[in-house]
Length: 417
Ligand SMILES: Cc1cc2nc3c(=O)[nH]c(=O)nc-3n(C[C@H](O)[C@H](O)[C@H](O)COP(=O)(O)OP(=O)(O)OC[C@H]3O[C@@H](n4cnc5c(N)ncnc54)[C@H](O)[C@@H]3O)c2cc1C
Image 1 (tube, helix red, strand yellow):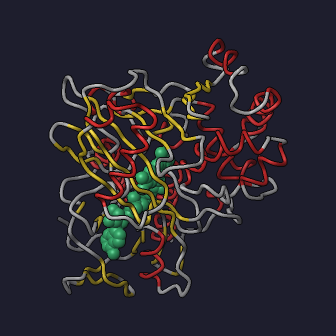
Image 2 (cartoon, protein in one colour; image 1 turned 30 degrees about the vertical axis):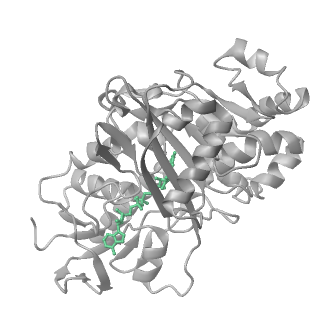
């Protein structure tokens, strides 16, 4: 461990690790200080009784340009979801396919009662709009809320409620669709351009792969930073560590605390319940969306139908996502979820064994307008102090990784002056 590094990075999530990787490549010494007992931040996986439980259901969109640049996809052994979804609507499940990748299913989808015929044609219009230009162009287009953008595109309220609300609401943990249209278009572009995938080792394999490229001893866990001073930091334990530069790579509310910002950014929460079953209702790698607008469940899937490694042999993993942090205790919540599962899948859901609940209070920042181009933001706060991560309201695996690299580049520029 280098006790006098050039740079201290506060936070061992994807932003902090990508910052560390860039500093390492450029020959600067650094120390990552991570408060919790492991790296990865919001991208972590627990191994429980042979199951891989991601801390909240999440996926890697393989089209993320920064992930493609940094990660070794082959080594992650990615398995894709079916490009589309199964939508629960009026007591039935309907398949909604990406017609560009599943033309026959896509065509059949035209005859489902989810949205009108014109709605399905409008998806084509939306797709061509989000694929046009560069990512920076997209972040410089006129901005409104996602709901307003969908209405402006002409989508019916039925299509918005049955498909976009559970789908996009589930991506940004915002069923009101108040999230910036720029974030929505970015997400829709990434879904359209690549696979939605899970690594065979769980989502936590992503930060693990980055951390494995850092020199030994450069990441320190259970090292919570209490405060930042000029030329260093103080840990909660009272220990002081000096460095020429400090990078804050924590989640937004903690970054605001450390930087002494008066205004705390808001948070979107999510809750994820896991069950085990030997009897899944289908074996395809499908995401199921609640298009009925009632009941606690927003979406669910069987991760082991996507990547077999998520469950021990002969068993399947069920992952249920609820937007927000419900007031009920875990037991009451489990009962409410099970009641809805029984409504959807019949009595077989009685036998699904409950495994665990994750409540993630700060899952994402609000990401409501205004959201600016994440590649044009300054990372320096003052001489020697830098910020990365979701500061300024933009999150995702892509932008966490970009912000880490860009913060490191800003630090290097400053150190070399
Ligand atoms: C359930 C869930 C699902 C998601 N789904 C997706 C998805 O499908 N696709 C996608 O692209 N994105 C998704 N996201 C968002 C994505 O995971 C995050 O935007 C991204 O991982 C944030 O990385 P980060 O490094 O900026 O922050 P974090 O991962 O939050 O890392 C910050 C780190 O700082 C540490 N820390 C905090 N305070 C201190 C302190 N005082 N001292 C030292 N360390 C500290 C924390 O412990 C943490 O490890 C999801 C997030 C959640 C929670």
